[in-house]
Length: 237
Ligand SMILES: Cc1cc2nc3c(=O)[nH]c(=O)nc-3n(C[C@H](O)[C@H](O)[C@H](O)COP(=O)(O)O)c2cc1C
Image (cartoon, rainbow, N blue to C red; front, side, top):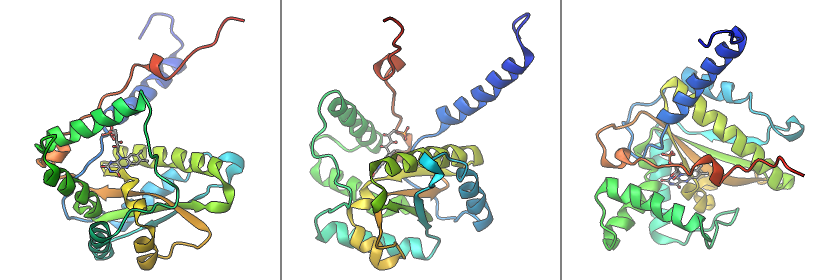
């Protein structure tokens, strides 16, 4: 401890470093072991994430969590849809990523393909890697996350905040995850299997389980831009 430092402030800082360690250790997992997570632990996780703030406290996330055997059945249906039909997300995916997002996106894909041993010009390998999304990476659970379409884009911000809470709480509980926009590309398949309200728009999936630590896909690591790339302080008038 620094001499003369306020002990409360130091304790607070140490708590926040624990939080940062959780964030540093979290990463997206793309190959899971089959064992499901106990219902009581899943309930604990989602109960903790209910603390997420939202504008006017509307708490607009609407979440359906699958358990075996539903997860496997849904994965089969999603793979069939991905092989035979065009993606059609309810919230349109970006068509183009202008710089610097384009470079970040390419680096993200390259890190995953490198980990998986898929060469740049290996079209079949890339297709198979893409299809793994629809196998839900063999996870025992997928949460399908939707939001009332009548609330508009600020409610999506609220759901993003909630996602951050879920990812953090899961990492703290030793549960591995991967958020998955890809799953939202086949909403008809999701709606045919799960009770998603007509008034809700499907935003993304979130697979949960325990990692197959040896799997090549799970060796993928991503980097982050220095903070100055994202945060600017305005201090002069
Ligand atoms: C909203 C959202 C959607 C995502 N969709 C997918 C997806 O469909 N498939 C996938 O493999 N990863 C997906 N990811 C994971 C990102 O690729 C990953 O978070 C990013 O590359 C940073 O890596 P990290 O999570 O390992 O730190 C998604 C992440 C977010 C937040």
